[in-house]
Length: 58
Image 1 (tube, rainbow, N blue to C red):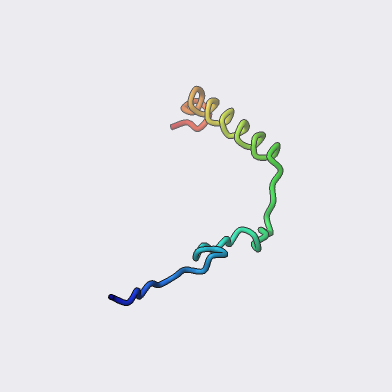
Image 2 (cartoon, rainbow, N blue to C red):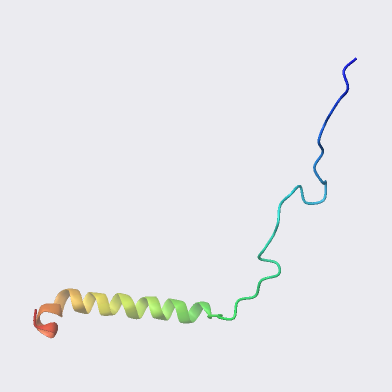
């Protein structure tokens, strides 16, 4: 009979590491702030696209 030379992994986490559990960002934004910022950028882009030549003088 041949010997079984098996390598076993730890059963608790199986080698997976979860980094986001112990990381806390110093910057935090409310979702409402991000939505307002995106809407403002879209409005500015629409204005520049339609009136950019007149406003910037290119």
